[in-house]
Image (tube, rainbow, N blue to C red; front, side, top):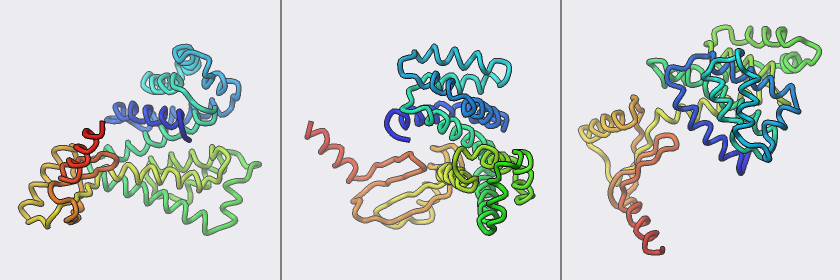
Length: 271
């Protein structure tokens, strides 16, 4: 996904983030349900990604289609999504898949031991991948078109009997709706989303000289307060920064180094 579709997905993920605190698995399940509806109707996909149609018209169309079938929270997410621009019809479905998976992953993250829950989810998904990829027979069985969705899903879930509810949902989605790729390949995409979300719990800090225990404790406390969660902090000494501190947590960067300030000054002088 690139260009306008990539920008739309980034906006959709940012909007979804506001709905994730307190979210339940029903949000993910309903988003996957809407995806199934779109994937089964090419005409609807074209209508919802037609660049000549106004966003509000597309939102009204999808609102009518999902009325009474999903929660208002899910309906709102889908309305916002179809109001955006998409380069090709497939991208809208890919975005829905990403939003559904992100919602499921966030449910695990929202537990008290957020980072540990994400690691558990990642391990459950890896267990499924390793088990399937170790057996050609299982790979064929999970891709058998003549088998019912229920039969393939039941087989898949038997392979990870101790997996949590979020992992089971993601495995179920990958098996019954792989959308043109192998189920394990889709699960690997879900693992990438888990890893990206887990990065939000790791602070990579660059400093110009080693920190004392007291300095590290103050840094840790300040970062936890700033980002609103218990972070795992990795500190790297980089004398080339000259002075200050650079912190990266996921996609967020806080940079107060001399190098950063000089770079900003050069940009202003170049204007």
